[in-house]
Length: 82
Length: 428
Image 1 (cartoon, helix red, strand yellow):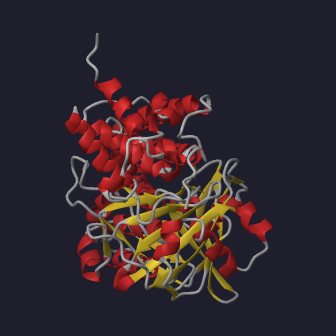
Image 2 (cartoon, rainbow over the protein chains, first blue to last red; image 1 turned 30 degrees about the vertical axis):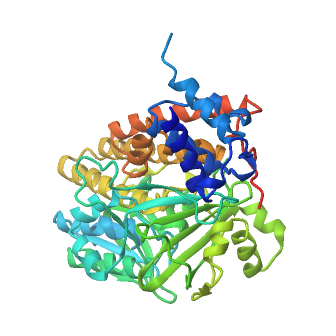
């Protein structure tokens, strides 16, 4: 799981924010740095890297507001079916 | 009694392809071209599928010899993204089963069209340039030839068993028979020129066609790398935007370029090397495109919008299917049946292009979502490869379009969805 967090942080830093990895904090606001291609690049990365499908209905501000929110979104979809 | 089996009006890619195929098939074809080639033309990027037709013509070695830029994929940018962010698709990712090369071409149309027309002559077609067809001649309902101005003011009548209108946007027969209609949904306008000194794309993306979305409804720009470091850059908007604007072309063009951060940055050192070309009267269709003794092919049938580089794809596949129809008609005498089959094939294929263009404009983000989603990406790539005239391609495109329409409805109904236009407005 921490591996997931690490990968996600690195991708957000390098591919989405185009910044150094160290500067991405849990609560850093993401939406003001995100354009549509950034959002969809991130979603495609999540789907490919963690083998999940993010439903279109989940593409709402609450799920992408911060790196932590994105992480939680991934966890929800990673959770094994009850 | 006939001057040729087939008279083809127009020597662009559609007319030249048909002329070459007829010559190769042992028929006498006369291609009447209004201009003297080479001449400039819009539409400088090919779909992958056109390589099948070019191969059938035996024309690919000449394209390699000419050194046309290899197009290995397409990429697109968003208006306010960080500099240099783009999403891309590579042709090599999901090749058609019968693909024999993982690239297609970007083409300077003056060179390409002139070479292809010469190729048609070499394959046996009789090519006349500077020959302005004034009208198609009819005997009752049946097209029997053309009246053509060969020297200023002097016309001759030429007779043939079949007349094919490949006159492009001029839509000669469409206008003569009053069949040409403005497209009810689109009224697109484009302005383009050639430039030197654009920032080169990142390594690995040389030859890619770049589309840049602009911060304006229905508007985008193309960036097509050509030979010798030249790039064609064009802007497409709804015509009303240009007309209302009242600006000069320079101001209008650079104003639109400024509506995409990446494009503006890549063009900051660009020098224009060719005068502006305007394509003012874009989107139309013909109510009918076959009749007794006549067929329309290529742009003469319909033109909508250049977003997916479908122009030459439609031109060359129309020509190939028209050849099959004419050949069948000549062999069996069953012209009506053969032409009706041609019409159905073309209408089905062109309708798919049209639906794709509509879906794209309805919500660009949905298109990007599908292109980047693992489940749909192969279908998006395969569909954009072109040749949408085969049943399996139409089936695939239909499923894709249905899914996109459904996604569109869902996003439209959800005020919070980030795929809605303008939902994400990054700062700086």
